[in-house]
Image 1 (cartoon, rainbow over the protein chains, first blue to last red):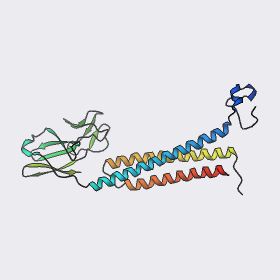
Image 2 (image 1 turned 135 degrees about the vertical axis):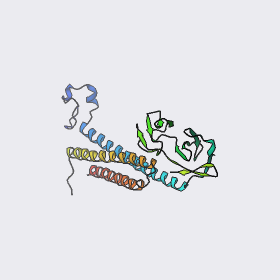
Image 3 (image 1 turned 90 degrees about the vertical axis):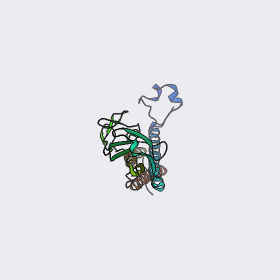
Image 4 (image 1 turned 180 degrees about the vertical axis):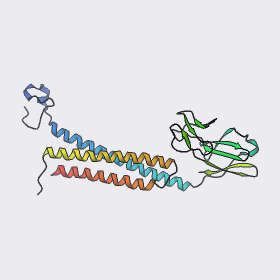
Length: 173
Length: 74
């Protein structure tokens, strides 16, 4: 029989009314609560450490992005091969980075990374601008800024240059 | 010599510390998501200050945990 006054069964009834198992294995509930909360605090501090490591990882990724420098200049197509008002897809700066190129006027070209800034779906050209079909996100064709739907950041702009009638991608703005 | 805390007092202290730690961890979570958003948007100026702030939060949490262990030893 437990005699410790701190060992209180959960329903508060005296020990002689408790099941045998509780008499055989008494639990000091206040102590158990103290230990449980202390351990939960330890777990939260481990989480806090994980968040600090996450911040350090962002700093590292930022540093490595700066270290890579500007991407190389890459030929896209000849200017006369691109019709006005038609979207064309090309890869820049890496082969898996799809970008879209739109010729809005005879002397005006716009290029953006095709990855939606919400959850990374591929955006396409529509009548009202650039459209992400996954969650109905919309971007302004002229600036790449989000105009409707869940995206909050503008599309990555690809800087372009025309040399001798050939269109080149020169960097990511 | 300092008088040892009773179990009831310890419980109150642990509860208080737990509440503070919880608030700090939520703050760190917000900081991480905001920094990630800024990083993806090529806004680099906030990255290092956010790391410093997060490390300060972690140091504060670790200090509170140390206090709990010191209290247990009394």
